Amino acid sequence: MYKRINGLQHIGVAVQNMDLSLRFYRTFFGLDIPFFDSVQPAPLMDVYTNNSTITKRASMIMNLQGGCAIEVIRPTSFEPQPAMHAAVGDLGICITQVKCKNIRASHEFCKAHQAPGLTDISTDPLGRATFFIQDLDGLHWQYIESNQWYTQNKHHSGGVIGCSVGVSDMDEALRLYAGVLGFDKVQHDSSANFSDWKQLPHGAQRYRRVILAQSAQPGGGFAKVTGTNYIELVQALDRKPAYLFENRIWGDSMFAHIGFDVKGMKAIGNDLKEAGYPFTCDSNDALSMGQTKVHCTYIHDKDRTLIEMIEVYKVPIIEKWGIFLDVEKRDPLKPLPDFMLKALRFSRVKDK
Image 1 (cartoon, rainbow, N blue to C red):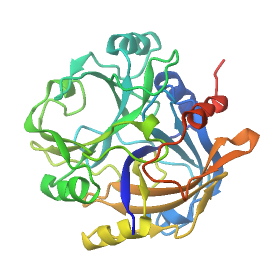
Image 2 (spheres, rainbow, N blue to C red):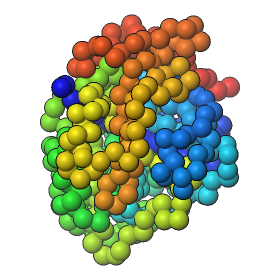
Image 3 (cartoon, one colour):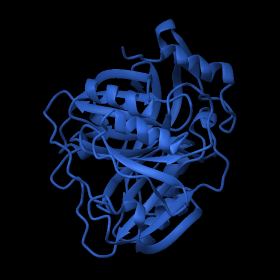
């Protein structure tokens, strides 16, 4: 049976104020194209919500210039707890990275628009120019200069290219992320005090940082847009890190999960089970989110970071015109044609 983890698809982020956060992500990251925006019960997540079905509003948004999407979540059946003030290396997703065209131009934009938590420009371990901001919930986002773009518009930023995940045991984390999940190309591995983190909470301490990419070519219908992405694993060496979802449930404000685009869910599930990471929840059949239809499953790593697998069956190209694409039988390595991808611009949300 064919199976493949195509790569990072999105990062889930749960917020306090949905509309203000969506505007923030449009302003600073150019994430202005929604795939869906709907309010529905979330029975799939019962195992992560104290066995009680919550209702939530969710919106998947992307930047057509390039990069992965984010899924913005806000519970409607309860008031979510505010985000914890995450420090570097805390267990869970502690930072999400987005790409930009020119680091100084992006820095000036963020300064002019009074981005919270703006840091100075520095250099990451791969030699890339970078800086950080915080969103409306205090979560850390990192700009990294990139030369990989699908389209060009006037916005300075692209979408998501990766995330930093705090782990307690690097070798065990590598067994999952580099082994089973296919991020098998080690771009960096060192233990030190890192200059690009010095302005972040606990950032001046010592860490082991391992930056992973995929040696396989990007796959899936949106590979031209998502491009190359990576996972950074972070182990704190000078302190015992906090668990970011301690006494919290899915839907409380925080980076919620990592989403991977996959093909061959059943076969991938067998591999994960053999490796000791069985599905903790499984939609089994197609799950509807608006007019988008997908098969979703979840696992969590040994530090309880949530990882979603998504096999896409039907996606909107221009939802308001009733134009959808059935991708279930497509060649999993064949990207969608440019005219379909670029038609997504007609769904763009513009702020006044």
